[in-house]
Length: 78
Image 1: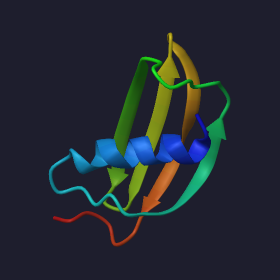
Image 2: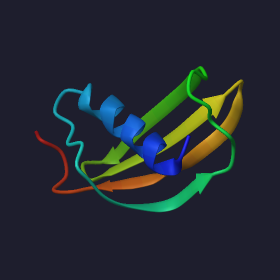
Image 3: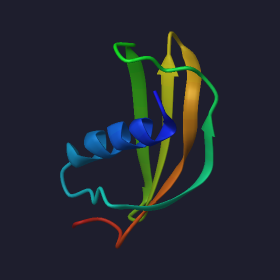
Image 4: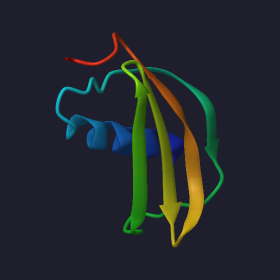
């Protein structure tokens, strides 16, 4: 699964969070180190470190396949 698809997956998860902005303005420290295939079961962890920043990790079979920090446009919706 391409990195852009993984980012879109993260954006979809962020949309489920009340009062979170899901408009991604940039990224830092992005690492896509493992292969993700359609149908894989993934553990997606997101943590808002401040209103305009999200840290994430994606694991498959207890192995980290992606991680990084996303900057959000305009911070939170709150």
